[in-house]
Length: 249
Image 1 (spheres, rainbow, N blue to C red):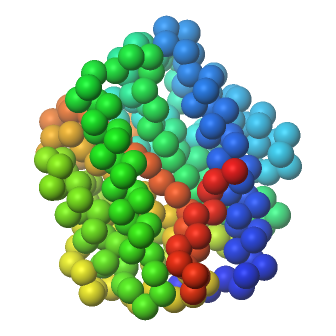
Image 2 (image 1 turned 90 degrees about the vertical axis):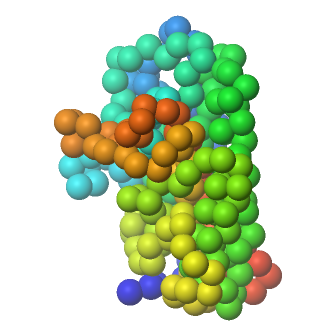
């Protein structure tokens, strides 16, 4: 069931989104090649959420053991924070959900660790742009398939592939709500976008083939061919004035 939110509820999600955006910015700025471990980032995320009076939504969700997901290089999503030392040339995806005053926001960024190759930077650039291509389609009267198709066409036009096993989703009163928001599909298909819908739009883009699999830790999704993957995400409200990005400061 798709849950429509009132303007007052959207403001509550935006409040959570502002906290989340500030945390992700701080985490991104704290990444230091050769020193920072993803476990450090997880601990910092917990502190920052608590200081803001919020809660890290992923912690304990379906048994997830950490406050954030940290996915390095060929890890696509759901990477577990660890004592792995980040090295120059790595790329790191940080995904986090925050609950504040009973409402949720969800966002992700992929950041370079030190100097990265031009090929890796291009992957990050195209994935970030794909997110905004999808957001541009989040208009009243369009359909979920319009978002999905726009992302897929943009990504594939640039020689990359979208992950199909994992999708975006509704978000707001719960961290995961209906409808699913795939990153591939046909325009004009799927649920009609209505005022008050709040969606987590999150292209996961692979440098190589689209196929992925889950590691033995039961969480970390990686690319089958071992090539890089990037992930960007915003929580967006559908309004009559156009898409409203809620996970910004």
